[in-house]
Image 1 (cartoon, rainbow, N blue to C red):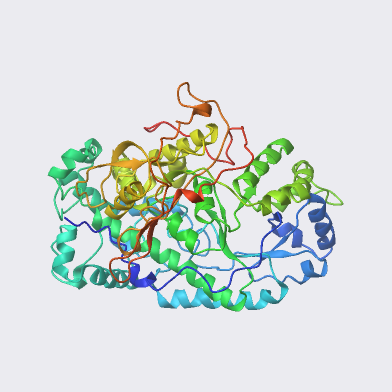
Image 2 (image 1 turned 90 degrees about the vertical axis):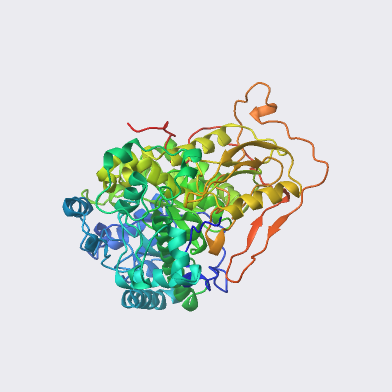
Length: 616
């Protein structure tokens, strides 16, 4: 039986290679950016003092807000980057009708009207897409002659706000594009109805399930249930693979997951289109975003897709996001925001992040680092604490690490965006009708899949992994695709040695799958792609070498001794078996890497401590 966890945005993104023709200029030095507030430009006489304090702080680059003029910085000989180029639609916290998100969703919950799901800036609205493209082109044309360090399309972008759950976007252009993708994917309405367990009479009647509707299906077991879910029955619902096979309609989540995947792909396509427009004018300057969220079914946070649409990134390290982006964007600049006011804490964190692969940092912010209320505007206590650290990070020793070739252990944590979607549905059953208040701040500490991922990161950092140990770990991945499992089996047959106990995997439609033994011998599946380009295995979230306390009987440093191979490891490759499918591959262990230097300390650049399962 075939189950379609469709990424119908293949229609929109199938021709997108996520790779501009030319590479940006090399980023081979550690860069320190001072995020600049309005006080620096409150009066003309402040500018010279501000430039002096910027240098005293140890910053290497200033900031120009999208439409602002860079002349003052240029005359002072201070390089810069361009911040917040897109003014409307990428970040709804500003310039939108829903900036008060709490009030907005509270009002929606009174009648739960589907009309509220029409996003003010529809993702497939050609007028909005054209306007932001023109905005980016105008700003790049203005700044390109002065060779900025980087372009930031927007800070804290989201389809909703942060990773807050809400059923954006049901605008007519977006639904039309979604239906077009479904027609291409399924071919006929009958095929779609069979795949979704639905009874749509025409293509114009096809609608994705809202979150309330998919929860209604989960609670009732009906294909197209009416009314509101039985929230009490939903709270009692437990996912059991064996029982789920007996009720395929109840666990057919495709009408919801398909739309979430479509939105993720569309969102990444918007960013990639803006990047291409910018690079067409200024091919040397990298284009990226700041303030990203954890992997999530809402907000557009499929980290694999985002990583392929950007040249650089500054992520919020929530749920292991820094490690995921660092793996997916190997060779591309990753920056972190530093807000510590203690010198040792800042030094420790920035050196740790440098060893993780960071190529710079953003100091938050000029208002905290410069005392604008005191005559002469000296550095604040925080500014004075950060200054020696920034000089250290921009010194010759740190530069060696920036330019060094990174090596990794052959240990992989599987990234599966469909599993992120399904896990959220399962975890949120206990929230009842208040699922829309499962805000990103709550998810950061209570999402069990993220907690499992972070726990694995912590264990890998604490353990010394021997070079011969090659393993793949899946952190709560119930929606693993058939193609991913096939790649893992093929990889094992072509040189993988040994195995560890399988984890039961199920695709998002709920079809029954056998428990899959995951390979322990050989580099595990990396960037494995599912049907129609769905990134079921986006790559290696964490591959780190760390010294730590081992467990008795597990070999030196806590790692299991490698098992013997009777043949050398080989590269296992999967080719597309139909037009439009993306390249699938399992990487061979000959690209195994590890840090040459170990950091025995446990803190991980801002990663929150893993919490146990369950909610507080």
